[in-house]
Every structure is written in C-alpha cells, then in structure tokens.
Length: 398
Image (cartoon, rainbow, N blue to C red; front, side, top):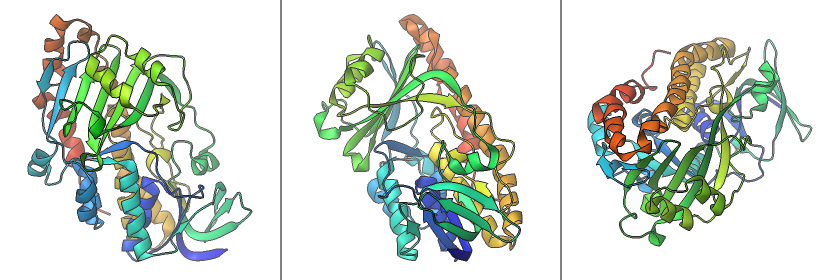
C-alpha cells in the first residue's frame, strides 16, 4: 500500500494517539497502526503535570479533560507504620497559579478515549487496528512498514510509539538491555464507594516507608481510587503491566504497614505486578525517516510521574517539526535535538527519586520526622519540580 504523504505512527497508546492528533490538527496526513484488534488502554491511573496539561489544552482537549479528571484537593504524606500524616502541597489549583496549567489525575483509559475520539473526529480512518509491526525500513524518498498480516505500507515517515518493548526500536538499533532495579510495582483500582469515609477523599496520598512506597489518588471524577505501590524484592523480573498477581502476595509485601494501606489492598479486585527496569538514555533514536517517541526511546521509572507526559510532549514537538520542515529527515533530526536532553534528564531524575521513595530513616518513628523535613518539605520538592513543570513544549523553537 502506498501512502506517499502519510506519517505512519506505530502504536495506538497515549503517545501514539497524541502524535496522531497533533499531526492531524496541523493538516498532515496520519495513520496510527495498532497491533490489537480493539483500541483500549490498561486500567490504571495517570498523573498529568502542568507541562502535560499545557499540551493537551493546545490540542483542544481542555473541556474533555476537565470533565473526567480530578483536580486533587490536597496532597499529603503518611508514615508507613503509624499513619502519622503531614500536609504536603497542592498540585491542583495552586499549580494553575504557579505554572498557569493544572496538575490533574486521570484514568488512563479515559485519557486514551479522549485522544482517540478527537483524532477520529478529524480523520475517521486514521486508526488502523490489527496491524502488528514486524519491520521498518528507511529509504531516500520514503519509509516502509511491514506488518504480520503480510501487508507493507510505503509512507513519508514513521514514528515508533510502540512502548517499552518497541519493535521499531529493535529494528533500528537492536535489542535493548534493561537492568533490574530490585523493585517490583503493584497497581489496582478501588471503587470509591467501597472505601470507609476517612479514605474516600479527593486527596492524593504518598505512604513513605524504608523499603516500600504506596501512592493512591482519585480518578474518573472521583469514582475510583488508583492504588500503586513499590517494594524492594528481587524474585520477579517480568516487565509487563498486564500480569495479574494475588492480593495475598501484595498484602505480604506490605506486612506491618498501617491498616489503611491494607484497607485499599483488601478492596482491589485484581492487583497487577511488574518488575521495574532501568535503561540508560539512548544516544540517538532517529534513523533517516524513522524516529521513536515516549517509552520506545526513553522509558522512565514511575518515581517522577512523567512517563506519559514525556510521550505527550514528544508527540507535540514531533508534529510541529514535521509541519515546519519539508524534508522528513531534517524534521525528525530537529525533533530529536529538541527532546534528547530534556528526556534524558527526566529518566535520570526519576531514577534518583527512588532514594527519596525508600528511606531507611523511616524505619523508626523518631527519625521519620527529620527525614521527611529534609527530603519532602515543600520548598525542597519545588526545587526538584519547577524545571519540570514550567517547561512549555508548545513554545519551543522548532
């Protein structure tokens, strides 16, 4: 199939759909190829910082986001064993005052649907399902994508937005070699109506412990509570979001933690677990008319809450470059030049934040207050976040 003026996006996740929408809104031909036969996103929460909502607003999604997102009333810290609570800071309304854009909490499926609906309104045929990419090639005057169906598509350029286990990346640069961090993550969703009143609140809460960390926050207009936790263990090395675990195993990982943590665990229908892997920033991620975005080129540990947002920023900048530069090779080279340093910094900072997530000083109550004052006080955290949230992908020089 020849699509000579089309940008082919491989992967129909949040990054791929954002790229498709950003390209379509600029009047460029785009086709998003998704390997699944059904367009859907895993059931989990996602934080969108002001650097991300700024982009989504520029793509015309402000009203749809506000309808389904939660603007957190407060953010607090709690001690893993005693439950002692410290007010932290608000990233909801105060984020609008500080960064001129909100920090919102969403269900990934809701954001995914908003992006897909917006794209198909612009181009009803933009999303092509059941297309698993098996190979990509860049030639002087076109790029090619081959699918497991036997079909080959010739197009103007290719954007690989196919996630951590990217086939596009492997075709360009060979298999990657992630390193296990020694941490396992768990996730689950809890209906808000099933929680006792003191937990059914529109607050985001971080539970701090010496060898583990728990975060829960409301999503989908406050109808669900998203639960995510991290624990130090070395017996699980599978990097997949879709492997179900057992509630008894999850509870065992947090044995001795406060009863409120276990109140969440008891109410999760099915918990999912995955190993956290770290990768060094790639020195380059483009080759000719083919490039990568999001987790395909800079997968990020969840200790900064920026994995999805980096893909959103990438998508906007890539589309802007492809609109401005007539030659796809030049456009993709400029896109990578703009994004390389920032995304590498996010990858490294997220890895460093593991030190704050697991603090041995939190093992005893008498040391906890000092540790929290040192690492988690508002002014210190602002120093760690201002550079991140103030960034405006819609205003960079293209």
